[in-house]
Length: 97
Image 1: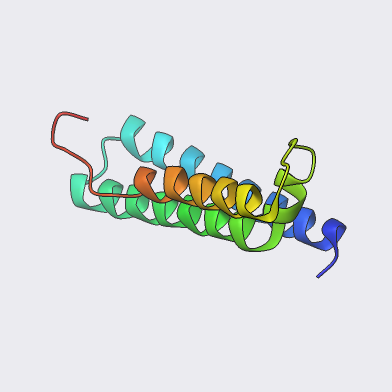
Image 2: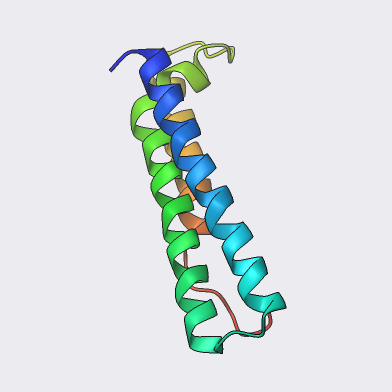
């Protein structure tokens, strides 16, 4: 997959999520059933997670290439740090959030 194809795929997915969020806003304004709203929230969150995974798997090299890294070991460490920061954001959500 080329860089342009990858970017287009990411943008398509983001536009789809944007539509989902607008739908959720409309559902809340129309006071739709909480379970239905939460189902759509979960779908939007899942879509964002898939976008993140897509970026990690297809764009990691592009995202890291401009960073000054002196060795392969440093590059691997940087890639792992990026992945861990992302993956920690998709963990369980506490009731306070």
